[in-house]
Each structure stands twice: as structure tokens, then as C-alpha cells.
Image (cartoon, rainbow, N blue to C red; front, top):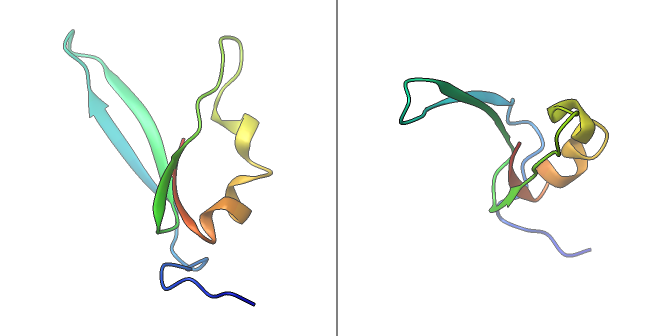
Length: 65
């Protein structure tokens, strides 16, 4: 088994609020550590689309959704 020094599954997700130029805010959640992976959903869905795969990705990556 190859181990990654960034492998951490015990880091809790954290909310990120991002200001927009028009005064609004974007919501994002970050989980895990390591190289970044950004998950985007399409119109008509939300970040729950990624619920099933985020835990596995977060074992090796900084997942931003």
C-alpha cells in the first residue's frame, strides 16, 4: 500500500463563505487535505450531489464543493 503524507480522513469539513462583487456570498465546503479537487454541480442540483464520493476523495485530497 502506498501511503500519502497528506492522507487524513479525520479532518472535519469546514464551511467557507466567499464574498461576491455584488455583495452576495457563495457557500463552499472543504474536506480533507492534500492536492485540491473542486467539485461543481450543474443547474437544478446542489452540493449534496457529491455526498457519496466526498468522504473517499477527502482521504487524499482537499475537496472543495
